Structure formats: C-alpha cells, structure tokens
Length: 170
Image 1 (tube, rainbow, N blue to C red):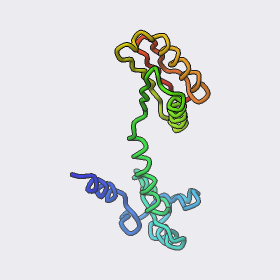
Image 2 (cartoon, one colour; image 1 turned 60 degrees about the vertical axis):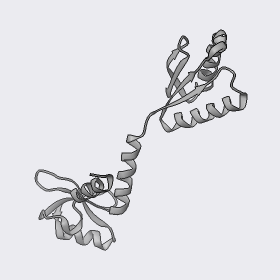
Image 3 (cartoon, rainbow, N blue to C red; image 1 turned 180 degrees about the vertical axis):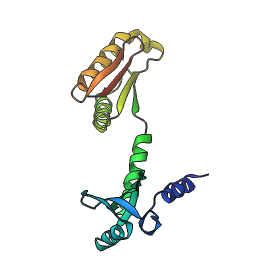
Image 4 (cartoon, helix red, strand yellow; image 1 turned 90 degrees about the vertical axis):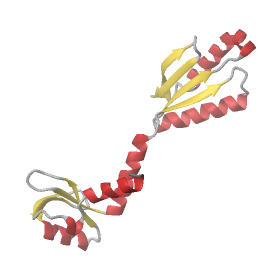
C-alpha cells in the first residue's frame, strides 16, 4: 500500500456533509462557537449558507461532534502537522579544527535558525591524523560554539573528550 492509498483511506474515515448518517450532531460553527445538539440537516444548511463544509471531528457517545469549516484547508493543515511531527529533531554539524571564519559563522547562523525552529543541534569536531595534536584548540572551538549559541539555546551535553556538544532550544 503506497502513500496515496493511505491518504485516501484516511480521508474516507472522516465524514463530511451528506456522508454524516447521525440524526443529530454537537455543532461547533465556523466562529468556534458551541451551538450544542442540533439536527444534522439544520447543521448542513448552516454550513451551506456560509459556503463551508460540515465535518465530523470526533465520534461522541450520544452524537458526533461536527464542525463547520473549509474541508480542503482542514486537510492541508492536518497533513502539514503530520509532516512536521515526522521530521528529525536533531541536526548535526561537523567541523574541523582549522575551519575558516566565514564557514564557522555560516554554521553558527544555520544552528541559530534550527534552534529557533525547535530543533536541537549537535556539533561534532573531527580530528584526523596530525590534527590530534591540537585537541585543546578543538575543545576551545567547542566552547566558542556553546557561547555563540547561548542566547538561543542551552547546552544539553558537552563532551570535550569526544569533542561533541549538543545544544537544545532555550
């Protein structure tokens, strides 16, 4: 079963307009006012008068809860929420100890953007060959990164031995 089929199945589960078989619904109108228990036909007429759809948002014990809204917009927002919750929350930035100032600043700016969106950022400084002699300088660079990001995030882990720092949104 591919994604398109899953989306179609998810769409079919939600009852809209004439698909609602219940004689009465608890109605929430397009201005988010609770109208209480009302006949389905009357709720459908209200929805059509404002040129919106009547959508069942929750199946209740007595009667389903229906809301007057734009169904296309509702589906778009629902899909957008699902994709946002599925995206990775840890971004990784790899640096070398001899990174240039422009590259360093670019990485810091990217990290600030990610932190402001709510993602956590993991900085890793990789040492190769003779670079291992300058381990102290790499540790200092890690501290500079933490200081630069202290306004938008707080340090979750700082491991100078393995040269890893993880910063989470403040």
